[in-house]
Image 1 (cartoon, rainbow, N blue to C red):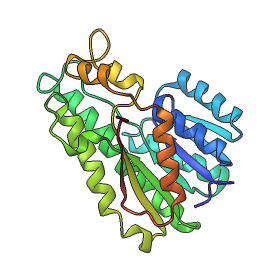
Image 2 (tube, rainbow, N blue to C red):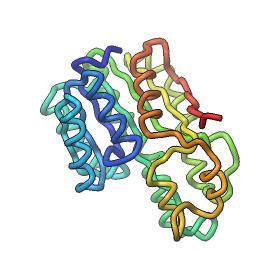
Image 3 (cartoon, rainbow, N blue to C red):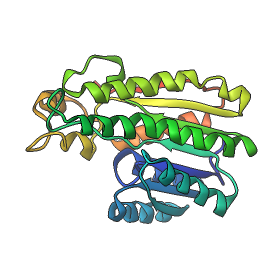
Length: 245
């Protein structure tokens, strides 16, 4: 899919990977990027960056885990543009502190709701809109932790594994709906989320790997997202983006 002139939605867009993807879509010629997040102040800053990069920015404060809230996002986009071409289901949260199993049941369910429920709901709402148009491309943000045991973040890892398998199960949508669903699985990315996982910065269980790794940048993941949007041969692709050696 050519990105020039397209209408896009990016969730978790106030910072990190979502913000970088919004800017990258604008730089690639997208007509409009709807930026979705619960962080209103940072969302406004992201919108300014998208506008500076050449696209119309539509900041929308919403909770991806809340169906009514997310429905309002898609309704606003359709009301304005009558179509949707690209969706990046990127919103996600981590567990700690404290980590599993000291994490509260309420926080566990919040992780499930944002990381997995939000992805499923976003995909569900996008499909009929894209099908009525000329099809579309959906990219989910999963994680390298989907493929390995991660005891301190057991719930987080489970949600990301769920995103991977949900993506693979959506392969038939290319034929039935004209919609390609893919996902990216980043390694360690230099964003705020890992650094919010500890009392004094990075969580102790992650600190050694964090300090020794060549960290990916959000722009690296945004580039991978755009590559999946552009490549019409990709459906059900699980693209791992590893940290450089």
